[in-house]
Image (tube, rainbow, N blue to C red; front, side, top):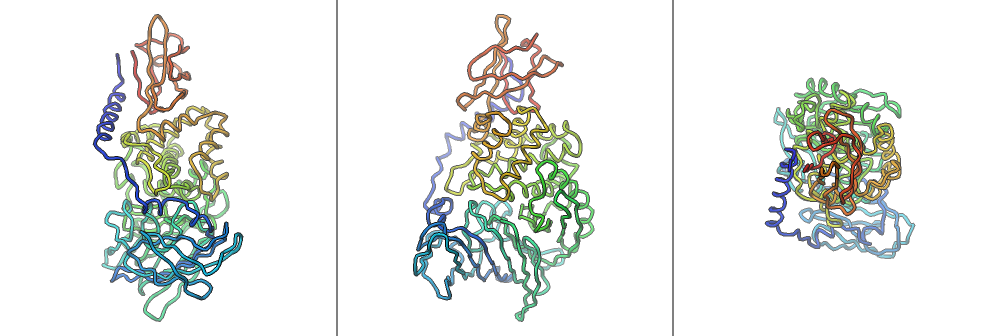
Length: 551
């Protein structure tokens, strides 16, 4: 038996995964997890149309106080609903039609009872007043909360980062990705001498009598909860425009004064090439009405819609390193490209349940390779994707458990990117693939989606049933192995895979020859590649992330 070296490494990873699984207890979910992650009738009974978040930041006490107006349409008759706010923050009162209404709390959920039945189709609104000290993030953006630090001159520098844990860690909201608010006003009051930069466009700046300044930002497009951002600091501003597919896009940059010259150079080198590449592959930037911003952040970065948080220290690569180890990752700024890629996948198209976060991360990680391809050619892009495999752990399914606010394995990034490249290779028509990617952005424009919708669309547009390929890479931790057997002058092939009926087409060739597609199943069958032998067989492992076993 002859193993390729990468197969041995893969088998070692799988062995490690198997032993780890024996040691790890099965995940146990609580009622709090269900309250956070499930779409119960108390959440689906109302559709959020508009928020006005009006919040004051007390930097010295690391506290927040203010209100959020919920404007909604009833989807059914109801008298009770749920919104969300972490229980370390106090709900001071809830007002409906000028009167306070009763509520109860359980875990981080708040249950509001109305004085009369809210009828299906009717519109209504209520306002939640709240205050307290929100969770302080210790390792943002990987944990959630507020970051409190100082700039080089000792002035306060504060930001939010709450993907995963949820927006209700700092403001009252219906905290589920399935219901994006249609538009939003974000009013943030900060101590005089500081500025707040949030999503959308700055409508007004107001000097208040209490030594504070209020900044009003309006978001015209639907926005998911975790994207709503507060960035407070002694920011300076510069701007530009980009002539894109939908016209002139405003580019606004908010940076600390000490970073101004570095920012001008780094942003000029990366932003417009990024937009050209992303628009070419995915279609027009989805938020022309709200503009595009990069904002200096005291953490690595986050895809806050129309106000992308940037903390890559003005270095190329990922904090000066190449995640792919291919060399191509050092030619551009990882955070600008990756986090901006989320404007298409994550912000424009949002997964309905966090379990399907691969829709955000797999496509966006793949967008890095497409950016490399747009700048340096297809071969460079393929080499970059191949290099991403060094980060794959095969430690669990990419799709997480539904209805408990739990995402799947971190392999949704690099393994997901490799999966999409394999789908492209199987379709074997780059023009059609680009059309599919652009079609996703158009078909699901400003929508929340499921895995089934995304896979179904790609199936329909490609004219192929690719479901079993998606299932293998999304729902199982291991990768399939192509087993090749040579006996009696015949070449036989089969897949060893977790997915029943797995039948992914794959490219093989005689050494140095032209690749040909074969379509093995999970049963051995003869493959027709002239002159193929055990000694000269080559499998396209540049484009396919699979194991190969030759005997």
